[in-house]
Image (tube, rainbow, N blue to C red; front, side):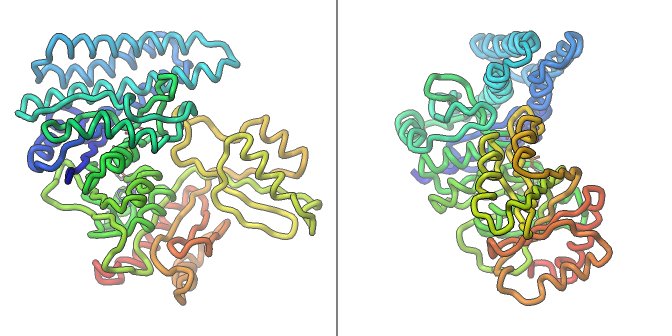
Length: 462
Ligand code: ADP
Ligand code: ASP
Ligand code: MG
């Protein structure tokens, strides 16, 4: 079928007016047959606060009341069936019950906590999808609410589960594709379930990824990501007002942007799209007429400088050992310890006796736990000296042929002649050049680079 998948993010579903704009978008395109929703803005953060188990009962109740308020403000505009009303009541009750159970857990019951957390976080998307289905029905759309956990099969890695794509493809062909001819399927992003039926989540911001997976599994013609910006910009428009929306960008460039911090797309979003060469459109649900960015396999332009991404709160781990000198196996030992604690290595540079590493925290677990545990440090310190530097920012220059173009370094570092660049990585990909600076300099660094690389060019060249 030649259908599209539309994903609406949290701000797009924040209230009834915002949901109505999303309904207009669905109505304006006959080919939109699958709608993937995030939780209404603020709800997942409130649920995350409940999942820590650290809130006293009064604050827990206040958080639950706030969630209920956000959803009731939407519900009052709708004629919900008694079935839908009791589903919403059950979900809100479930939020309270799970939050209480988490608060009563003992130290050491981490496994139970992460499992309950996913169950708790899933309530956000379940609530918003129920409400948005009714918004569509009242606008005359033949909308059908689908529990995505019947299709989105994952591993049992609560907080950041791995998707079993083959099973998802098979389940989608049985449970979604036959409905698409006549109905618009409304379902939840971000959540899934393992083989035993336990609820799982795909990592914060994972609804973009869900949309792409469902697009792949149902062989759609395009994935539309509707958010609060009119496309993918040259850099986060919150950093500099000079940033501008790109008309087009390649899968590789956009994947690097997402990996290196451009929140507009979850880092895994482009994996399904790339596998099946499905174009991804990014636009604003507030201003659909403004157009947006098309992400596709091949772009007409291949500029050296396309965009700048920023990832804050980076930690640099430097491990030093004289054993490393001409000795095989040292790096393997360090990396084995990191892997044991489920830490994925991001940037790496080495010297004669040291290795400096940043740890990838994109799509980190849903509770947002700090990554470097005392247990891991103790294991590392048994084999080497460890230094930790915090509050760094990773800046990534994204483009094409960066590895073979002359003068990139000169242009970059002459612009930053008075900035201490803590670490530089380039060469693994032709699409990026990354470096670390002090966190408090990040905004200034990006504004200056943006000015030097994008504003001095004619717009559209980049
Ligand atoms: P949603 O709730 O719709 O998923 P997100 O908040 O996750 O929306 O992503 C949209 C935000 O991403 C924007 O408001 C913007 O601040 C941020 N962002 C970061 N980098 C970029 C970029 N290069 N282009 C556009 N937006 C970006
Ligand atoms: N609601 C989830 C979050 O806030 C997933 C998403 O919005 O994509 O992380
Ligand atoms: Mg998002």
